[in-house]
Length: 162
Image (cartoon, rainbow, N blue to C red; front, side, top):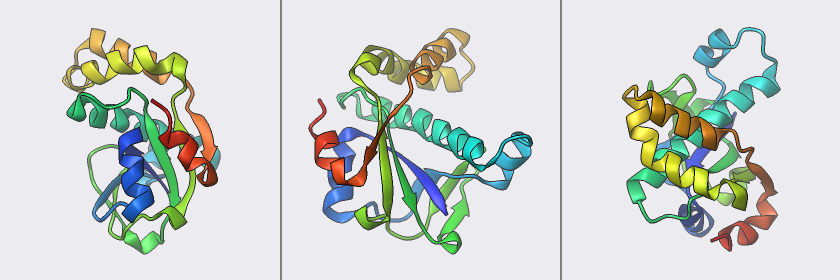
């Protein structure tokens, strides 16, 4: 199953060195996503799950405070039976096995132009979660930026982003 793991530039070093240890909070095409997006094909459903992971990356940035202001999503393939629903979001899951570099299909990261919007969105995401419309607009501004795609072989390049 393809999963989308929200993370930060700094935490990618952990992925490279020892992997993410379970339970790993992630996002995937769940039954709830399929029900919500009835008309979507698999690619559209995966995009929706990836978007929710990108928003979850904002929460990680908010929690760390001094991280590089870029949303980061790791796309990885894990066994179907290693995934459990988390109930935290429509696409929210927990991966019950380590997610290692060998599992990674690609890494998705904001470009330089998104940094200012991501910084503001990271500060606003908790208020947006609580229903603040202005904060939700700030989060939406960051979401308007498409994440760049990197092959796993380019991880060192991504780690060099600051």
